Structure formats: structure tokens, C-alpha cells
Image (tube, rainbow, N blue to C red; front, side, top):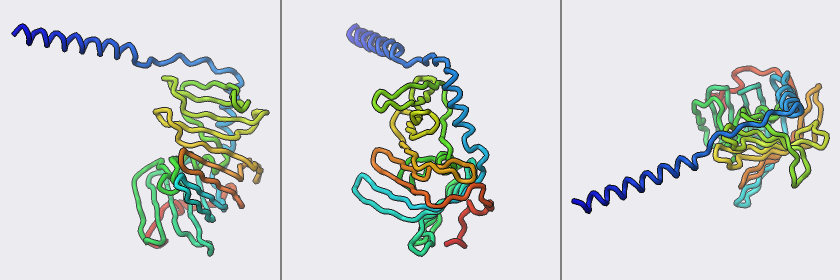
Length: 259
């Protein structure tokens, strides 16, 4: 009996030590540094960039390479309506769609003309991973295709100079100090050159570079958009772009008649 009591005391003591040490290593919320006027100005400018652009259409070429070594390129066409409606089609040499995805803010559709089937699921902000192999959310894609920078909701924003590149970088973090997004600017801090998006564990979701900026009907747009993650690379080269395009609500719903 005494031996059992002794074992029980050992277990209780060990459990107490583990719990106490665990409490000591729990990460505490950090105190955000007050934003500088320049940081506030940059965030405000990002929020209002192309804010008046409601709809758009575009045609371009997409180049994809994967970690396995496969490469392919195709013509693509897209139609978007802020904040959550998108239609994207991969075209064959004759200009007809071979695969199409659509999102209407409530439902995600994915269709392959080869299989004659439509995949449908209820999602308000679906990932485009099924279509392009990269964990890019629909709303983020709409913002990028609309010449806007996706800006994550955050508790802290700091503006620093990247020691490696010398670029100004705006880092957005949550209340625990975990980095959510990094936004890189040109030397004059007037243009966003790239962004990096991170998941809740701090792993890179994707990085996106913007170049060949052009102004179309008063809207500044990147005509080269490169998106990469740890395994895949996607380059979109925009060839034609129509801002404030007339768009029908049915555009973002796929039905059997389109197969």
C-alpha cells in the first residue's frame, strides 16, 4: 500500500511540474508598437488604391512550373467583380475554354470540358488551389487582378528596411506577434513590388511579385504577376484589360448548358 501511495505522489508531483512549466512557456500577447504617421499613410493608400474599380475583364497568358519539373502555358481569360466574384477560364488554341472556375460569393464552381462534369461546393471565399495549385484565396485573386494589394487584418504594422534587399517592407502581425503578411515597396515607396502571405503557423502560403505597371483608363495595373509557393510558380502576363466592364450576375455561376 505504501508503495502505491509513493507511486501516486510521484505522478502528482511530475504532473504539477509539467503544468507549471507549461504555463511558463505559453506565449503571451505582445504590446504593439504605435504606428508611425508614414505607416498609417501607406496603409491608407493601399486601402484606397483602385477602390473605385468595381468590375474588370482580362486576357493573357499563364505560365506554370511545378516542383516535379512539369511546365505548361496557356491562354486565359477572366472576369471579376469586387469583392468576391470571379470567373477564370483556361483556353485552347481556338479560344474555347478547356477548364473554368467561377465563384459568386456563395458557391465555388469548377468545370472541365473534357470530363463534362461540374464540381460545386458552398464556399464564400474559396482557395484556387484546385485550379492553379497555389493556396491563393478568391478575394485575394480579385484584388490582385484589380490592381489592389491584399491587406490582411492585423493588430500591428511596422515599416522597416529589409537588410538583405534595402527595400522598405511593411510587416503586418497578429496580437501574438506572428507575421501575417509582408508588403515590399519600391525605393520611393510609391509602388508595391511584391507581397508575402503566411498562414497561422507562420509558414509561407505564397509570394507575389508585380511588374510592368501600366495605366488603363486611370487605373494602375501590373501586367506581369508572378505567384510562387514552395513548390510551384505561376506567371500571368496580361495582354488586354478592360476596367469597369459590364458584367451579368449569371457570369459567376456555371451550369450544364456551358459544358
